[in-house]
Amino acid sequence: MEWDMKIANGTIVSPNGMVQGNIYIKNKKITAVSKDDLPGQSAQVVDAEGKYVLPGLIDTHVHSRDPGPTYKEDFFHSTRAAAAGGITTIFEMPNTTPPVNNAENFDRQHENLQSKAMVNYGLWGICLGHLNNENIEEMHQKGVIGFKFFWGYAVHKQTYQLMYNYKEGEEDVIPPFHDGEVYEMMERVAKTGQIFAVHGENSDLIQTLTAQMKERGGSTYEDFVATRPALAEVLAVQTGIEMAKQTGARFHVLHVSSGKAVDLIKEAQAEGYPVTVETCPHYLFLSVEDYERVGPQMKIYPLVKYKEDQDRIWEGIREGTISHVCSDHAPHTEEEKDGDLWSIPAGMCGVETLPPLMLNAVNEGRLSLSDLVRVLSEQPAKLFGLYPKKGTLSPGADADITIVDMNKEGVIKREKLHSKSKITAYDGFHIKGWPVSTIVNGEFVMREGDIVGEPGQGTLVKPISN
Image 1 (cartoon, rainbow, N blue to C red):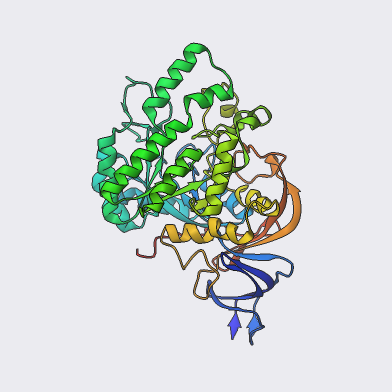
Image 2: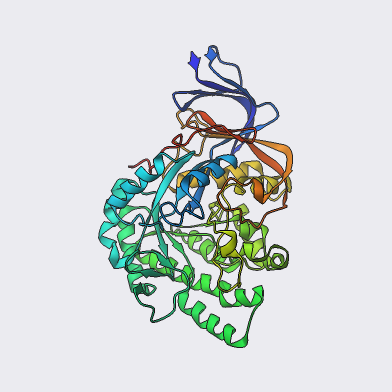
């Protein structure tokens, strides 16, 4: 037998455990996994002794802003950062210019991104209520990875871009959708069988609390959190769960930030409803207490909250309530982040630092390496219909592989990040456990920390049913 690549002597990790062995790759697929050497020649042999071999890591929540405000980020840089961090597949969010709101714009976005892609990518479709309810089915047929609704945000009438700080009476703006319109969107998406994912915050409550706080002259980060409290997330999640029970929608809560919301989701899951939830590193590694040290770099919506929320979110990962962890990579420029806490944009880089932060957490004993494979590979692949092509090292799977060195130590340095923007809350974090190789479709894109791949190496992924 002739193999394109053999990854030899590594510790192969799955959610069920670890085994020493070899992985054989041919024609961009994993063709064999064996404890013993198989007869035949390999064009390339990779010695992974002392290292751990993981199914390619997946980041389901990335904003590359391409097309759109690409002075902040673009797809080449975001996928380069993903490769540097050990990510083999990203899911690109749909709030671009134009948004992925119909079949035509899905094709345009695929054409725009393909030549820039250093890693594989899926495309989210956006839900805009009456503006594109009729386009939900055609986007499903095209192969969107899921449908996203930005609950609580207004939409610009001409560009369909989200308005993050809506004020009543603004011109050329469609106000945040009311609950009846959300229900209609859920009904439409439920018919496709795909995920209806929400950025869940209650806009009415936030506007009221913000007006009250500004009248009192609030200026601290805790004052800011008081205007976007756990209750804002809980109200949206609670409403969404009840609507999902009625519509049959697969309701997914994006970037959960509060322990109380995790409790609600756990209850719905116990009742047998298809309610799922993700979280992000900022809710796992930061809390209100870190603001004095980190500053406005850690402003992100929903806001980073309290240590008790952080503890409950970690518990939600360990108990299986939270399906996976993703970055919510959303870069801004230094100038945009340098200003008043209340007015600067929310978001930061995250795709490159996601795996190192989680690997360090493994070394700290917060989760096992098998747990990490579950929340960064297998579960995302299963949830979005990519398994068993992705999320596993079984024969027949795509040859997307992340090799990590759990003994390698280093420091996250903002100037070393591969994104256009260098905004991160993790500058100076000491890390033990780093990705050392990223293999996409059977070829290296990152090796020993160096980018060795080429734009266009990644390909579009769609749910297997498509």
